[in-house]
Length: 80
Image 1 (cartoon, helix red, strand yellow):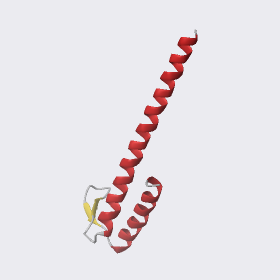
Image 2 (spheres, helix red, strand yellow):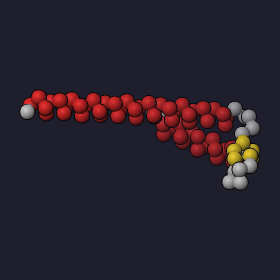
Image 3 (cartoon, one colour):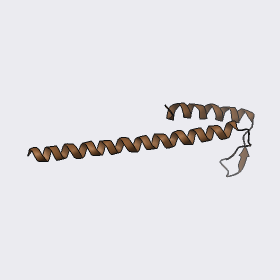
Image 4 (cartoon, one colour):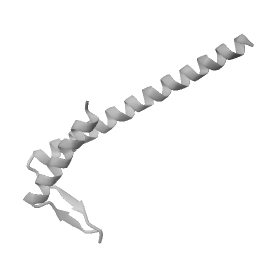
């Protein structure tokens, strides 16, 4: 009986460890993506996005500034 309880506890601990590792990998990936996006926006290159009609539209200065603010917030959130 003790053996089964110990095995169950070990399995639970292993599952928790794997879940934490996956969350850490996902957080790192999100951090890297947010940093890359911010770097792109701050580079000064023209940035386009696809609108609801499926057409490409380039960001104007106001939209770029808003996107930069949003990207900085994302970096702060994911890269703690």
